[in-house]
Image 1 (cartoon, one colour):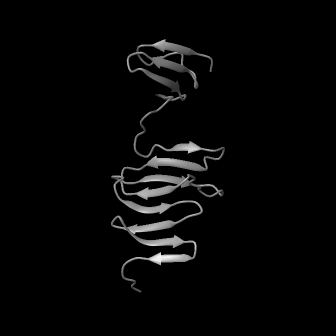
Image 2 (cartoon, rainbow, N blue to C red; image 1 turned 90 degrees about the vertical axis):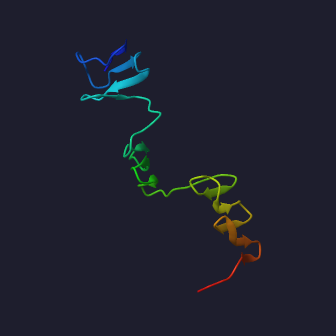
Length: 130
């Protein structure tokens, strides 16, 4: 559509899918879907609202009310890249896994390192049980 308006409330007439507004009352940029006005630029998403990426929506990021999900739903695989990778608890105060390229991969239990890779193999801390 070809309509852009600056308004103080969402319009209810002369609407076409793709119309854009800036609502000065809510300070939100919105787009008309053909059925409803939705936020065009979201900073906060409701539960079960998925952010979709890729031509076939191959990557999804969402929260369903009980868990947060980053999912590769295509055939390409999910890659996490960094100069080091650290997985922590939700409070970001306990390490569960720490990996450094060309160096160690460490696994932790209760923030205590129990397993690490080395250039010659592995080191296992604590008691080993089967």
